[in-house]
Length: 108
Image (cartoon, rainbow, N blue to C red; front, side, top):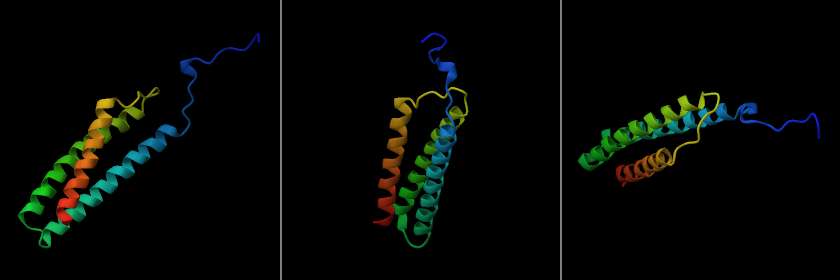
């Protein structure tokens, strides 16, 4: 056992994991953007006032989600990325649920 050393935190080799995570965040934001555009198209083709309100709220929630995702992608570029805080994870989950509800309101 002599000559061997225990790994330390500076020995971290993340490989391509941070890049894969950044790409997953980008795919999620892209799919949300496509959903928002399709919802807006639905409103333009006869959705009415309640659907327009739902699309407006969905756009606002999407901008919040975009800000959260951008912050996370920037933090993943660090040599030692921090774990996603619970408050950010909760905010992202709330944005996704809100987008689903607003999307259902537009279609209904």
